[in-house]
Structures are given as C-alpha cells and as structure tokens.
Image (cartoon, rainbow, N blue to C red; front, side, top):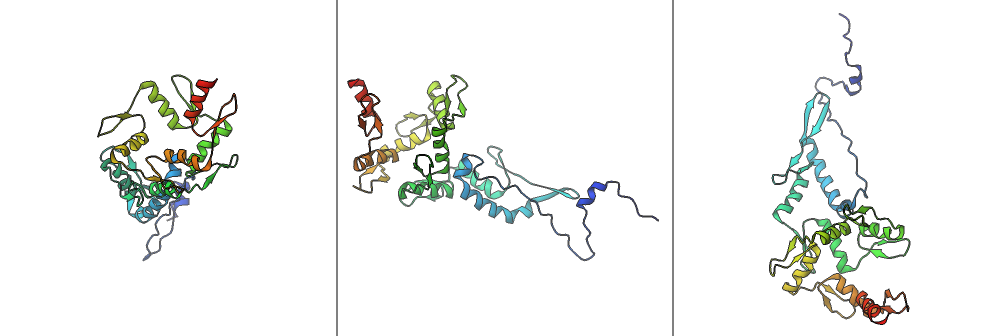
Length: 268
C-alpha cells in the first residue's frame, strides 16, 4: 500500500516526530515584550511588571490548555467583581487589592501605604529627593519618566488631549480630566471627616493631613515640616532665594505666583 498523501501540506511545518518511549517536548511560545514607553502606566509599574512576568513564567505551563492538535491558548483569569481579565493569577491577586483597598507596601518614613511595590519605590524619591530623569533642553529634573515626558511637551508645544466641548487642548490627560470637572463642577472625592469634596484624589489626600496633623515633608535645611511636597518646594525658595515668577512689565521677580498676581493687580 502506497504512502498516504498529506491532505494538509501546510500543517507539516508544525509536525514533529516523536520516538517511542520519548516524551513530547512542550511548545515554546514566543511572547512579545512590551516597550518600556508603551504608555504612562507602564512607566510607573515597570518594576511591578517584571516581577509579575517572572512569577508568570512558572505558572504558564500549567495554564496552557489544548484547543486542537498543534495549537494552544492560555486560560485567562477573571475578576469576580469587575470581570477584568488577567493572564496570570499573580496579576489578578494584585488587581484584587483595588477592590479590597489592600495596601501592603508601607513607607517607613511617613507611613503612607501603596498597593504596588513599584509605587512605594517611586514614592521614596520624595524623601530622598532623587530625580533621575533630566530634560536635555532646560536640565530640569524629575522623579518619574512620565513627568519628564509630559514636561517635554512644554518645549515642543504639543497638546494631544482635546476637550470635546470647548476645543481647549492640554499637554496631559490629567489636565484634561481636571478641566472637564471644572466645567461640570464634578467633585467625586469626599472627605469622610468633614464631607468636603474635591475634584482630584491627590487633593483629598493632602486635605486629610489637616485632620491627622501629618506633615511628612521636611526641609533638609531648617527641618520645618509641611503637609504637601508643593509646600516644601515653595518653602525651599527662601533658602535658595529662587524667584521664578517675573513681571512682564517691570521685570521684578517673586518667589510665589500669588505675589506676582498681587503686584500686577496693584502696580500695573
């Protein structure tokens, strides 16, 4: 009897000879490694992503299920609350902290807590004043690569985020979101002590320190403490004598924006 012709010659590329008594080697799947600058979230979670991928490699073989001979796909893990899908159980476990409000990573300086290790490591730069990302135009330094990316749009005058109501454009998505809440007067973040409401979660977080009397930001010159990092930065201008705000009429300079506004209103 002659050799039977393969009715699907293109499948031959997937064919492998398995000798009697030998185990078939598992297929090796090649996954695309995402670019570091895929989006802003990737910048903030790069360390976290690497940890998850290492954990996932061990689980990957168990999670593969055969759908037909010669082809495999991965079982996805679904959140019971919001139905979001994840490739690895470790990613789902981290996501569940959002629903449980679990923050296992705590700063040993100011006791602020975070859901992700990467967030804590980034936060620590506030206390160490580490700013590893430098603008190659004006040499201004930043704690986050995403902040540098947003800053570069000042030099390029790029404003990719458009308001669909008034045609205003913004450099960052957060600026657009803030702008929209001003128009709608939406204030989704409420203080559970005094019920005051805020447009941004960061503003609420800073406000809560009024009730807790927490001042996590300390001046390294005079040891004065502040509720917000912005307050500390403003204070440091006293020591450096920095006056970044200039009157465009008489060229007089000021440490604070409100001082310049008062000067302009009363003198010109």
